[in-house]
Amino acid sequence: MRREIYQHGKDAFVFKNLKKAKREEKAINRMITEKQSTRKDGSSNFNVGLMGGTFDPVHIGHLVTAEEAWQQFNLDKVIFIPVGLPPHKKVEGISDAEHRYMMTLLAVINNSRFEVSRYEIDKTTPSYTIDTIKYFKDFFGKEANIFFITGTDAVLEILTWKNYEDLLDVCTFIAASRPGYSLEKLHQRVEGYYPQTMNKIHLLENPAMSVSSTFIRERVRENKTIKYLTTEAVEHYIYKYELYIH
Image (cartoon, rainbow, N blue to C red):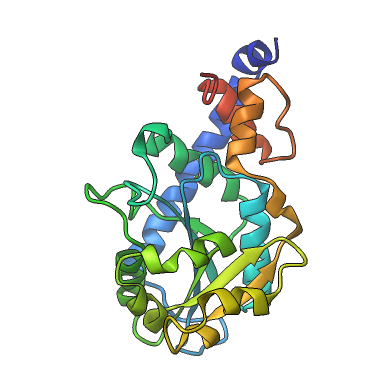
């Protein structure tokens, strides 16, 4: 019954937000074309947060993490980057890239500090973090400070990533974790692999980290509510296009 209500009663809501998302996408593309890499205070350094992920779907945990990172680390922008062909995950279980991109765009349209990039989903080759970071480093210029926002579990897998040593040279990691996770514990697990590790990882506590995309997909399949686990626009988008039902 809930899906029928969303399918027949919320199309106007989704359509309105999709139009708004498209306008936002055009504005972002204009910004990229103009390469605005100067901070509001006039200084040349630009603090950019990059947040990659499948975003299948994007949820409140992603948004709270990005907002906390923006505030705590004085970021000018947080750019959400839906992954294209992930090297560490099976592609079969991931929703179409355009759906994931549109849901992410819908989720951030009311926050001028957030943007969504098509860089990875438009690639035809696997999306390695090092390549993405170098792309944005070149785009914003050598004076830009790049912060890669991810979970502590992902940071602990850093040694499986392509050219992991280069990652620590070109960016700073913001490791989002549940409250109570100690930075010392994180450092103990990665200490000794690379000399710069200790100074290149910062812990960010996030009470919303208990929410996951897997949890949301399971609730949709079980016909349970997902309200407040993601934004209203994303919630309606999921039901309109009948994502995660099977």
